[in-house]
Image (cartoon, rainbow, N blue to C red; front, side, top):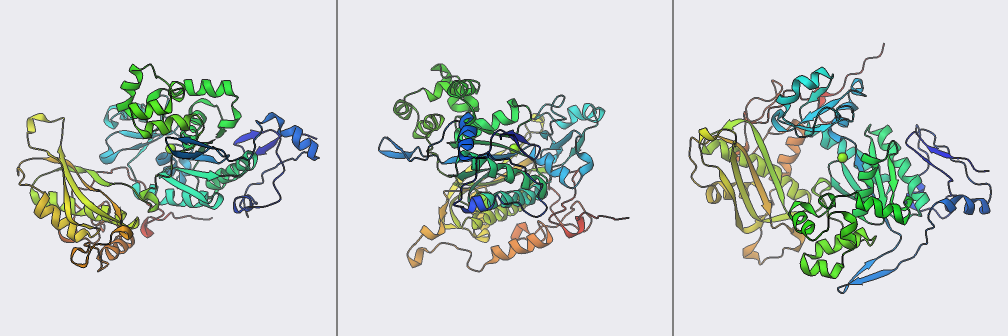
Amino acid sequence: MATSMTFGTVHTWESSPLLSSSRTREQCATQQRPGEQRITEQRPASAAGAARESSSIPALVEQTNTVNINGAVFSTSTRRYILADADSFYASCERVFHPELAHKPVLVLSNNDGCVVTRTAEAKPYIPKGVPWFQIRETAFEHGAVARSSNYELYGSISARMMNVMHEFFEHQEVYSIDECFLETRLPLHDALLQTHRMRQAVWQGVGIPLSIGIAPTKTLAKIVNHWVKHGNGTAHIGTWDQFDADSQRRLLQSVPIDEVWGVGRRLTRKLSSMGIINAWDLSQQDPNAIHHRFSVLLQRTVLELRGIACIEDEVSATTGARKDQILCSRMFGHPITGRDTLCQAFSVYTQDACRRLRRQNGLATSVGIFAGISPYNPDEGGVPLPLTIRTLPTPSDDPLYIVKFITHELLPAIDPSTRFIRAGVLLSGLIPSSEYHPFEQFKAQRDDSHIGQLLDSINRRYGDHSIGIGYGGVRGTGRAKEEVGASWNMKRAMLSSRSTTRWDEMMVVKAN
Ligand SMILES: [Mg+2]
């Protein structure tokens, strides 16, 4: 007896296998939860049926092989990477608390309501990405589009919820950005698929965010499959590398331009193109050792990944408190600012933000950089921008007081008081784990032993950004709401939605008749 099985409304997969009797944590999580939509699955009536049913899917053999490249050993086991990426994430977040926006074109604008950064599928046919808002405002309204200012507080909060739900289904999770993460599994393909379907459904039902998912033996291939799911595959929301036969895999790789391969980037594209490497397939056919010799070990790994050999380890992320090499905090101002004091104020606020992220990953910064820019559109205004200047700290630190003092006294040069700055940023770099720093007593790191940083974090978390700050960063000005504090140069966000998950006074009100 063979019938199809349907996973909610997202995907159809013929011929389900029987779940293994030895249950892992991942498998246990596939059990239906209270309130979860029933997923129907019809199983083959016999073991022979199971074998017959699964014959349409490439056979998978649990094995662990290794390949040795330049002395480094990489595994070619049946480990799989699942790349879960939210669809139009910012716009989807806007829909969570405003269901009336479902099926409407929704746009989210960049800082200061400048450009369109996110569009829902309904808006894509007539609103290009990255276009300045003022240029397409009329067209957007004609099509009934709804525009919103970036509400990073809301997006960050919803992202954390979404990541938590996914982590319940797969133990190994690497949060890659605010809206995407890699999950790792060693489940047989069918079980991994079933688990992934359930995870997607749980995120949709519990958080309200739609996901597109690519599953492959390597992260680079998972990226490619995910892109295929989003842009070239009709209605299915989950795709796997294994569902392609060898010829289809080749054609899929040939359809991916070289500059869209994860980890290649614009800089390498020109050089690779001049060598006749114009798509992912071309790159996968190169000799990995020659690529290493001519380019770098990073590109060599990309070649191997395109061949199905996983060799890109987790790049841990600040989103989860994991480790990054540098932390950048930069913003556009709501209006141009002048004067050293105001610039110091911005640097102080950004430093506190950067130090908060640094503490979350238990790191210390060994260098600090600052920069401030002027508008490229008003050359007549003149003024002197402040290019990125990086200096090594006397001792590694995560202390905002110490770093702000260093910036204002050592790093910030005399500035032209008439220069109108439109953006500024603070870069913490040369990050090291604090646990690996063991100086002699007299060279002890400027650690935030007083826990002032943590205290600032908790107060700002509770009462909102800028409710307290140190030195120049203790600012008061006009916020969005009358009672809200914030610097006058804060970003312009005229169409900001409610921060329903992080502010008591902006929580949704539900009325029942
Ligand atoms: Mg996304």
